[in-house]
Length: 272
Image (cartoon, rainbow, N blue to C red):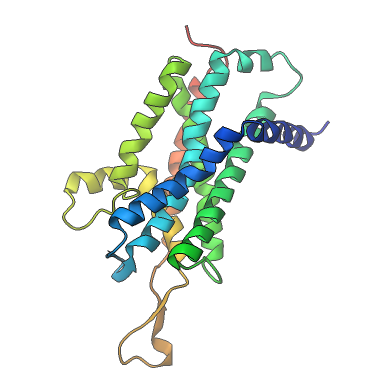
């Protein structure tokens, strides 16, 4: 059996296991939408100034929760589930089967990416019909897709690297959430960082990949908004949200760091 066939077969098994736990599947998809409703209800009545453009706060949160969904699927879920499988001895027993380890991990990562993609689509459609936010159509679609692929792969690699820090399955949820939740706040996912935010928050946000991933996704998500300068002629229309490939490069660099650390420190056997 070819490597692609092995990955495809394991992907089907992983997908079946995911949907056979309907409660877990439901809250996986409902979580970003719940946060979207909560934050827009509390903070969504005003506007946020992004790249010189006054953006509805509700639209801001649609893009932020789309990025949050990808991070949850590809970082939080992979890190926690992999740790649980490691401590249950599943990964150790897997090494004694004909299935290559690379095929197993590839299937898990691809499945997480599929779940992340579904979360993005659900969030954007929910935002469109409930908050009248735009959809990534036309030119920005390519940038949006590239941002998604780079971010999902990078956060999956970082998730596998983080498992080396987790001593046992019981410690997985608190450690993983202790890593990602502060970054979500410091990167403007849950609360937009305005000009009054402390400088150290901006520095932390700029160092880590969460902020850059969210900004790359937002630029692709909102890149079809066109603004015409006052008094400008037909050629005065410009795209409001410019896409910066530097954001994608930073996210990809973090992904390479995670891949190197995972290759060096990832353990297939329970930690003692």
